[in-house]
Length: 480
Image 1 (cartoon, rainbow, N blue to C red):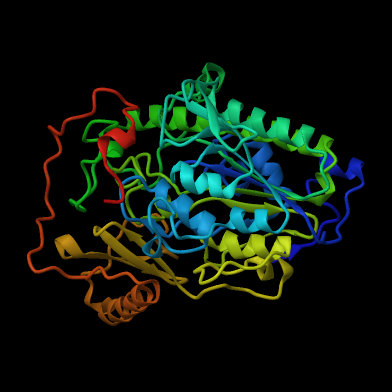
Image 2 (cartoon, rainbow, N blue to C red):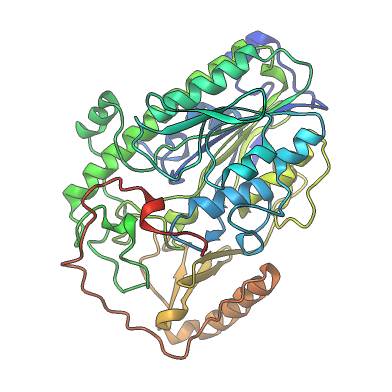
């Protein structure tokens, strides 16, 4: 399944004498994108996007090709995703501001790590202040014009100060961590959390990156539809009002061009960060983790946002590169929340209590072929899903609707088999598995309701927001 390499990120770091020995107190550099689909990395099979630095990470590190966000209890999917990735717990066990929850950077700090953060947090200042000892260019909102992100810094007295805006978001956050890497001379290991806001809308990449794809537009996704085939119960939220119904190929291609431009620009900033790491004293003692908080539809199934349990919206990139990590990949089912116990193992720090995640290191060490036999996904009270190696069942309780997909023959989830009598036993078995997952995670959502809503909806005259990037914290009050 994989082959061992001599040194991670070889083109840059071989010259630095890096070693394959496992460090006892390694550094962690966690690069976390926002709204990036798993199929937007060139090395993962997309010939229409330019991601040379992510491609290099994939060539030198270990790729998790079936990695997912577990889901969300509101339209701002990034809030629970970031809560889960920092706690290792499913969102069913968490409060929105993460009070009463011990977070990974808190434990690392207590164990002698220097904890640094830049970029988007989105789970409240109190939990951030508990977690990080240093921080520059921190953003507590959910989205913003990429050139006008409201930023704060942590001063020496532990106060968030310097309310300001910077340059382009990805560049500002890259600058912050590059300055940290270049100036950090202490003996203590560090945990650096770099949470980008790209490629979240507004889709406004710098002009050269926008023009790169305007001149050669990406193709429509294979599961493009003008409109979702039924009312799933949440089709009129902010994300879905960024284009008129029905979706047209021209509009989706334009948004894809801008989206790809944001990713390629983000990739360039990742390259700057990796180069700074290579030139620092920390290169041979640092694990680099690249991930995103979830995916995005961008025309798939007639949707634009991430508020569904389809593969395109909940699957997300995950690559780990480090001193003892071989090049390779796995299709084992993993969650973003698995990073908490994985990082605890890598850093030799005490594991957090009662987490729902699992250590992933056995996958690249070759001692495990899988972590779990099935995967559970959830979105508000709208949808619940479970999948195994072949089939995926989605249940929509509020409209009494079921979908069944054979992902081996239909990876784009276009052909619903739920009404085919030949699959009755399969649906029964998967429904039981879905209920087992609900019990395990503490999910009390019923799979049926007394008075189902209709599945039809006319969106031809649906209002659009007047401004493409109206802040999501104004549109909705989350976690209530």
